[in-house]
Length: 148
Image (cartoon, rainbow, N blue to C red; front, side, top):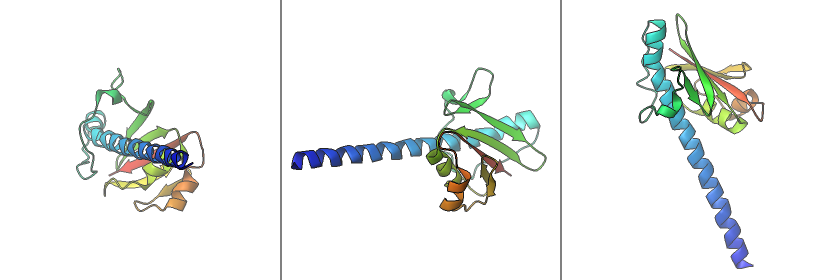
């Protein structure tokens, strides 16, 4: 009985550890996507934004580039649109958990607004209940970050 209990506990700890690694990977990848928009948006829309304070780590891996030069994350295209006063990054996600995590992560002062599923716009200091309400779909949510 003690062996079964220890085995069960060990499996639960490994499972939780894998979830944390997955979430950390998503955060770093998203940070890289946001960082990469600086040069991409400058080239496409002819104005500069600075993402140096977004805490992105590492370099953008080739897995994010598709053959046509667009960016993708979690297997979906990332839509980047430059407006006269801000840049919008639209990130399709697959789960409510990832959506909430993306909304609650603080990417720095240049990410001035965030929303999910066009449901509501959240401030930089979004709360967990607000993020849960915005990420209502269990299977597919789209997160939008606005950068100035």
